[in-house]
Length: 214
Ligand code: ATP
Image (tube, protein in one colour):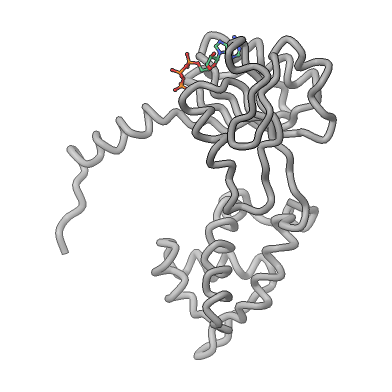
């Protein structure tokens, strides 16, 4: 994201990709304007929040007209740096890692897993989903400088030491799929996704906080 982004609250910034995806679909179906109510229905964010979010980037909807889809799209494209591809490395080509390599976020055209690392000799030297798998022992020698993001899908006990090595190599952001809580300097961003916890929490909420039938 670019400099303009720094004026936008983090909660708003997190919703931008959601808005962007929906607007792209609208645009390809030929729609030129959209109301905050329509957007709200599609992205499940209330329309007052959408209006406030959009006001941060100078998109003021007109009553009875809504928002101009082209204007919004070009803003999002710039803000989310859609023209620039962020290269990502993945560490740990197990079940989850393998799935990510095959998936490779092809629907986001601004991120790409360009290489992976492993300790298992049977996987090292192979290509999975077109992504080369290297020996983790060679990370310091062959992780390219332009790779700034890492996905961690290793066993929890290996996560911290690999994180330390990644940071020394200049990685700035880590998507952590291990249950380990990672200690990192303040300038490194970690997003933690523990799928087991998310699933358990969904089941808990279903049991204890069911939505009332309308
Ligand atoms: P997943 O959680 O991805 O479904 P899995 O059950 O296939 O995993 P795990 O034991 O979680 O396997 O390991 C994930 C991958 O990380 C494996 O391919 C394993 O070889 C690799 N791995 C194990 N230890 C390390 C390590 N210290 N450094 C890097 N990779 C490791």
